[in-house]
Length: 142
Image (cartoon, rainbow, N blue to C red):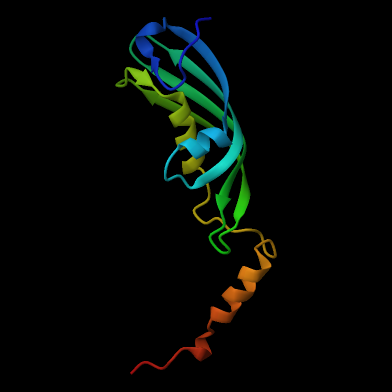
């Protein structure tokens, strides 16, 4: 099979049929992307491109881990990633499989990233506790 650039698959190069691409998004890839919530990781990707006469679909299977910043203690934490997605399109003439896989990883991350109870940096946990207020401590409204 011809070598293809995963970041620029030109659909006109493919005859109708099914094509498989196996690759990984690793820490080098995640760090190369500016302004990302993903600090690093290793996600194995299996992509299946199904080309038809007028359209195509891509089946992505993702499995691995990514590192993100904990929203509570601001330390790195690991999140397991496992997802299967089907993307259909008839408009695009090129596909960036790397970016598509990256987007699939990020949209499937939980909205809140927090270590399990007791997993946060102990110094930060103590600091947070000193700034928490209970309802009884709230000042009365004037």
